[in-house]
Image (cartoon, rainbow, N blue to C red; front, side, top):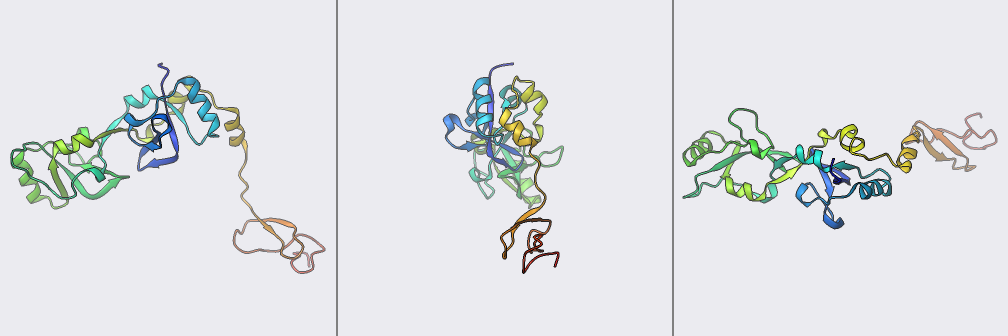
Length: 219
């Protein structure tokens, strides 16, 4: 296993894509080619420093499962058939995974995986455009220029990609995981100030102080 790790961002996911820390800590992105690469030692330290909000994952495993996708912000919003251009692709209107579009595939359902997008010649593109009103047809080279490698969060396997890659859960993260969340909600009695815990998060139900003059549930 190589000494390479990517670090997830605390910002969570964009659609099904994992969001990563960018090179030198310059923000975050879903594009794997913009993700910073950490050593095992660095990854272990950042995991602890983030209190578990950021998870380091083996870059080798991630790269092996990367998928090419295209962000809708960087391609035309209307169909384009251009003289002299002979290769086209089509994506579905008003359907996104995060910002990524779904591409037409002749043999399957539309997919966000650009490598699975069917290529149409000029005649096929025009015929498809005339028959399918729910798709936008654009020159393939436009999408090729802006495609990026992404990683689906549903592919994360901690046993293999984290612990199997040599990382260990930091002690601070273990402590936080052991804490049990309190299902009840805290209120202060408006009369005597005593703290009360109750299931109802909205309406104060009374004070358990026997000597409370106004809100005692024992009155």
